[in-house]
Length: 221
Image 1 (cartoon, one colour):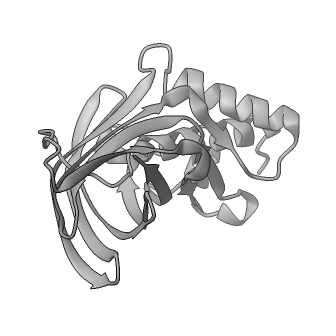
Image 2 (tube, rainbow, N blue to C red):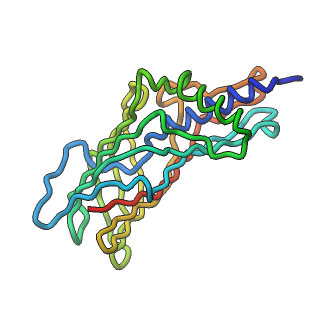
């Protein structure tokens, strides 16, 4: 069977978008109700320039070997977290992502890159209608694992493309001299946000419903 180039570009674009969905949220949560900063606590702001946040979409279907997995980077996001020295909790986190900042990092031609990103933003994410993706935590718990290191469980709610869904994830926290680093990964299903995994060729090539998010977030006071 023959699948034209435009079909693959469309598939890649939607894959990226789907990623975003997750993406967006896919980040550590920390609290829907903001926790006031106490004398024993601090408020740090996310440094997007020093952070990394990516989404990985995987090809599936009968002819998945003919397709490609896609990696999408989230370029523009901001937020802040309140935490307590020595115990982390009580703590909270809020984050906002610019939907139009998603960028393809795969090795593809510049022409294909532009087409995929355009389709992702205009047809999948509809950034003109939904310019932002947001996350607010509702609870966070942390267990000390080493010197200035903690294993955290973060629960909250992510709002993407007009839909809000609960999200729980784990993250490794590391505190340094006026710096906080959170590393982790989690999975998210596109269908949970009303997104139908993209497919071409009658379903012989399609994007798997589950996406993998990986983050390495850096924050400073």
